Length: 194
Image 1 (tube, helix red, strand yellow):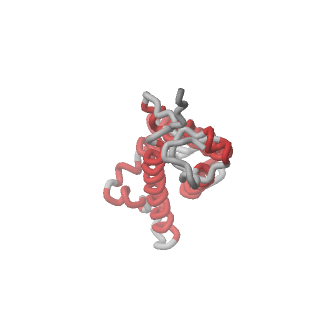
Image 2 (image 1 turned 60 degrees about the vertical axis):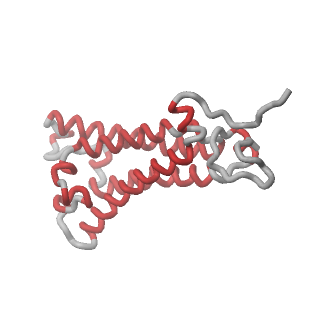
Image 3 (image 1 turned 90 degrees about the vertical axis):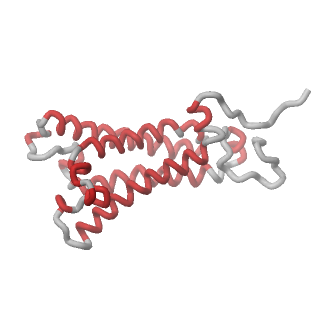
């Protein structure tokens, strides 16, 4: 009788995303996250380096399509994509990496609630505490541009730590892993769990 040491591949989309497709899914998700970061960094440069007024500092997309960034749909949509991505890819992480990934997921959940609050205000026309514009909870104490840079940073940093630990697992984490993201150990055949 032969016992297979191959990692399970799964049959559902979620199973595959967290097993044999985990690495490309993480790369794709990371590309989306970095593109979003680029938008915020360009907006920050427009404000603090070029001296543009905040309403005119709309990042790259907003310069071409101003209506896109003036509505809350784009911002809410991205917050939802982030939340779904973090949720869908979480099962591929084990041990320390999973802890950090779940930290990012928890923070993104709150960030998503903030964007949902902004979207509801946009759709209803009723703003929080009678403010003249849509306002999130933390925006009551931190300006919106700085707040979104902060949110992106506190979600991104635990994601980076999780991915770093994910490709450098301990022996126990490698054995529990369902994916092929970590490099193989010396002498270990392809597809064999440690």
